[in-house]
Image 1 (cartoon, rainbow, N blue to C red):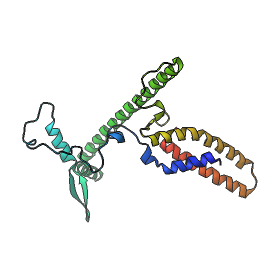
Image 2 (cartoon, rainbow, N blue to C red):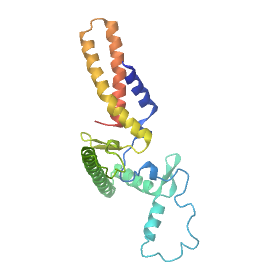
Image 3 (cartoon, rainbow, N blue to C red):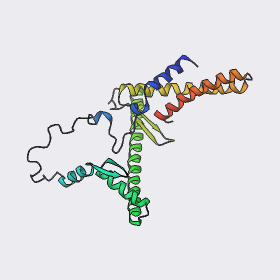
Image 4 (tube, rainbow, N blue to C red):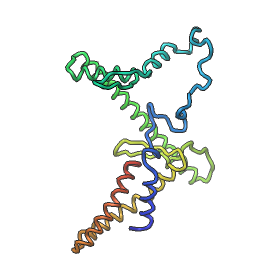
Length: 237
């Protein structure tokens, strides 16, 4: 194995996929725009008397109350132990349990909830995928035009190289931080080299008769495959 591929494997191990890349979509805003853990999104709190005043025309007071109740933590007895759930989770769990026990109405309600939720997820995912695809194509064309004409133009908020789309799996990945951008570039450059080396190793393995040497080749192929699997997890082809 070349030194470059060893360096790639080490870099991948140093950067777990759960920390460096993630999907963006409904309920999953970019990390940079999320509230800091342990810090309120409204540090000054509710203004004094705000609960009792009439809502403005642009306010949805009832919606705020419902959402507040939906995510309020409650204690629920499960057998011999008490478990803490949000109100919404406890209600859905209750419906699911009753459905599993054969409750016809609960089964109908749970099936309807599941169907509507999956439809919303599919819609959100399709909008994200199409939006990312259009963004990437438009900016690739624009940057190519600027390079061809030698004229400066607008710069993208996010470079098209930092938007990875797997058309085979329908997955979108974004690189926002410098570490994420570096990892994307590393995978794009290294994957072809590792695949090429894997083909060479397979040919050597098939031609080799010595069992000890074949074992060494197997170990090297296994190490390369681990690196490829991790790359696929982070940036699916």
